Image (cartoon, rainbow, N blue to C red):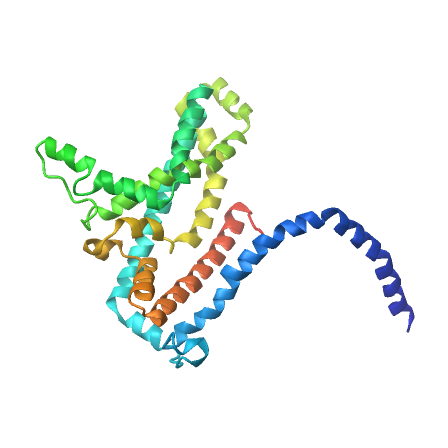
Length: 315
């Protein structure tokens, strides 16, 4: 009966030197993880405790432990208000429009750049279209206001042509297109990188065989290039499903105003106004928790779909 414990002790004593040897070689890598893990713990996991305010009538003077508990009253309130469903619809519509337009334009841009023969021209175009990605929405928002505002460049040009310029940033009709176009300007270049990488992985012999069979450039693009991108496009589409409730808080906060709340106000901007401006912390917390739980469910669905259609999984 004592043989098994003794065998385990012997095995453990033999493995300890291997563990020490492994840690002696790799400890700098684990040290490098400490700042990232610390940031993750402080700014992502520790704040999860604050979600209790979604079930309280939170009073900053009483704190998290002594504020009165109201259960699901905050959720009954937000689900009974018509504004919530308008916020939800705006968030979903804007996010879907952005995701679809960015991916379609990114695929198109990647294919066009792949067809360019001049390396200098290709690199120049790539540098230009990548540049907006590295600018914050604070900077880009100011640029767009100067261009599309009431006294912006576009308005002055239209006025000079003898026409009445539309109020791009104060019109419920124009505001969503402005969001989509500005998102394309910022993101389409960066989003095309993954498709350019996928195009590099297509076997050149397929193009050569198609050319020998008499296929022109458009036919090779249709029957060789696009099928070669199909798997990565499907994967990105599935993974983006988890982002349909992230309509771009920074962008909308920089560009919107009360005149476009009907079509431009989203869940994140409402949480900002309700929580930080109106001090309705419990309502803001309830909406934030609702969005997070729904977003988690969408991420799990996206993971399942990506595994089913593209064979991609991370665990």
